[in-house]
Length: 354
Ligand code: MRU
Image (cartoon, rainbow, N blue to C red; front, top):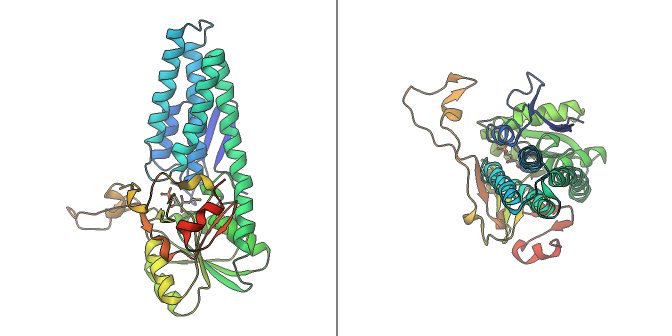
């Protein structure tokens, strides 16, 4: 299975998702600033994958701190300077992309361990502890995806055509995937006839990444222009929609790739189940509703140009929100590693929160 994130001897290698499927190449990060830039530029993308990368980014920062402050002089001033360095690195990493909560969740998890190790054993010990925590986040994610897959596949009726949006697969996670984890598991259980992948303008995660990833595994996939989704549903060709998530509020509202809300509305009209598959690390219970979720706005150029060539008149303006909010009432179930939550989501989410 494709591996989007690799760590080897102090080097973080990220599969460059900007150039797939034409090119399969990795870029390397050896410090936290390079990692933050790779996340911002979408070399790596997808909520769990940017969380894992952010965790490794902080491990790189801890190793930089060990080089700068780990000479054996563990005076309070040196330790305070090292801690300040780690906190600044965490803030740079977290601000690389605002919508997916997995990024701050993972960075803060590594930061907490690193700062505690720093205070007790100095900068060198902190680097080791930070790396171990980043590695745990990655390994846990793969395991969590497998469990989401098993829980979600049970919802897919044998003989189903399943639609997905964006890429919530191995490329977007530590491996296996959330929405694509459900689809992979359902495929291997002989429940899936065809996966319909929406191309997902403007970054084309569906066309470039989901189609590629599924084809690598021999899972049948048909691409659709985003605007074809409603018509294909009206033909009775879609039995379920499964998508991932970037942040889920306490009432069950879901932020995910732009176009997700439109699909959920269409599902309601056509009486098609609309499932969200996400790990617990994607929940942000500090937010009462999706209205509080910050939606990333990306450059106008992503809309005005295609592969470096203009597709709009010179001087045209564009608005490019990268995510939208799907209200809880449009969601048939949220599939997590701890079980599946059915409506009313605001009341029932408690059953999976541990
Ligand atoms: O802008 P992206 O490609 O990072 O957006 C990704 C998505 O919206 C995914 O659906 C979501 O992060 C879930 S990935 C398991």
